[in-house]
Image (cartoon, rainbow, N blue to C red; front, side):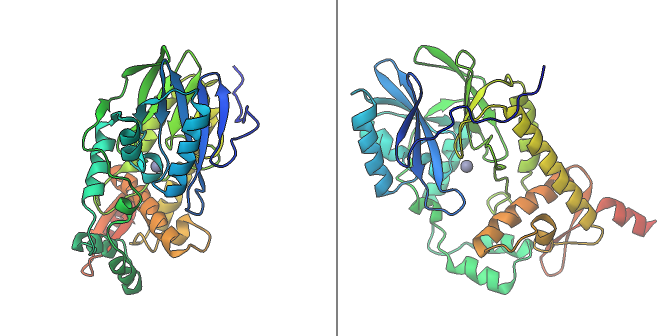
Amino acid sequence: MKKQEIEYPLGTRPADGEVLKIREGLLWVRMPIPIKGLEFINLYLIEDGDGWTMVDTGLNTGVIRDLWEHIFETHLKGKPVTRLICTHFHPDHMGLAGWIADRWNIPLTMTFGEWTFGRMLYLEGAKETPQFVIDFYTSVGFTEDMLDRVRSRNFNNFRKAMWEVPMGFNRIADGQILSIGQKDWQVVVGRGHAPEHACLYCAEEGILISGDQILPRITPHIGVYPSEPFANPLKEFIQSIDTFMKIPADTMVLPAHNDVFTGFHNQLEFYQNHHQERLDQLLAACDRPMSALDLLPVLFNRELSVPDKGLAIAEGLAHCHYLVGEGELERQIGADGIWRFERTKSIKAAVA
Ligand SMILES: [Zn+2]
């Protein structure tokens, strides 16, 4: 069979804060994100008998709440939202989960891993940056200037972007079938970008709602953060690619960013090649001990802003940890507390 190229079959997208009908009973909503580089999130509404199932909510801002009220009034055929599913805990996806749940008196439906992590982050906000966060950024090689910036930031960025995360939820899990609008939608869990990210696949419609797990034009962010300093999320992300490859290649994908697209197997292959390329570059650079900060220019050949540096280091570490997991790199902890990564082969050659 000829491979299907990436295409954008709708040829259009909703206006900002507006709605586009993909099919009867399937609406695409586009909401603003005031973060450079992301700019918009796609949210979906599926007609479900006497109501609507909503997938993801957008950030918690007054503007977005007003836009939702307008959509509820004009696009839902006078029917209520009866179920809310959030794909994962990131604030652009579940920032308004508590508000929607209260507004319609409905429960929040999520995987256990995503709800728990979101609820936990919501509760743990603190005025002072905790010491373990400083320790983590010391380990990755942050300079004193950069550490001062971490110290001066409040530790409640997550909380600020969220309406209160509901105290309870309805659990969904990988492989579970949900009946939405009398059609079967299968929960397909992807990992790496978030701990237990739910995607929704409807074979009958030939549609996959992919959240941030599969995005056209860009690669999902895969990073290591202070709460789990030795995590290996890239391994999980690469393993998830095999899971999604089993979904038919002609499926139309409804992603959380950019546009609705087809040909997603190409994008999955692109992810494999892209990460392999980066892993090769890292491995080549680690013929001597290198910190995550030292490795930034190897992975990113452009000037990075300070916030971008944080994300880039998280990505770089994810690649280092993958190689540590495969036995290709070794982590050394210096007297200065900084982690440095070196090729196992270089170490062995030096010893021999
Ligand atoms: Zn995300």
